[in-house]
Image (tube, rainbow, N blue to C red; front, top):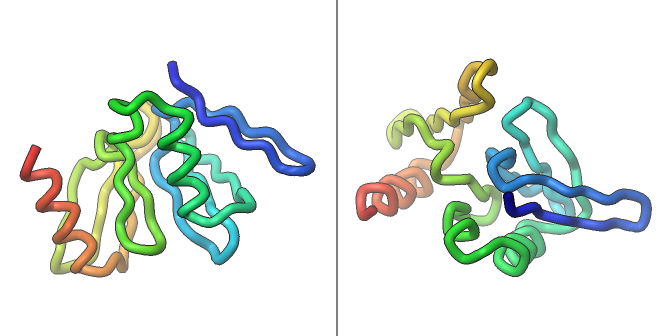
Length: 120
């Protein structure tokens, strides 16, 4: 299984692609949310994370990750439900964990995501 490897001055992360639910931006940092419920804060903005995904994963795996605006990268096969008017996105987590609900997402971003998913 492909793994995303990120090294900082004091940490090393080795994350399987299927474990990554989404990545959010927090200024110069990115928060990676895993399907097990753990989250890691990594120094590097979303552009850095996007480059890591594109360079370390095979093309078919990298295409699973969609960037939505300036603050979110989501793995498309974890998407269970989205509602553009309520700004809500429901993501699949691990087999024993309940789905993860994201709220207050800009409707324009969810409309873009909906169009991408409908075009598949």
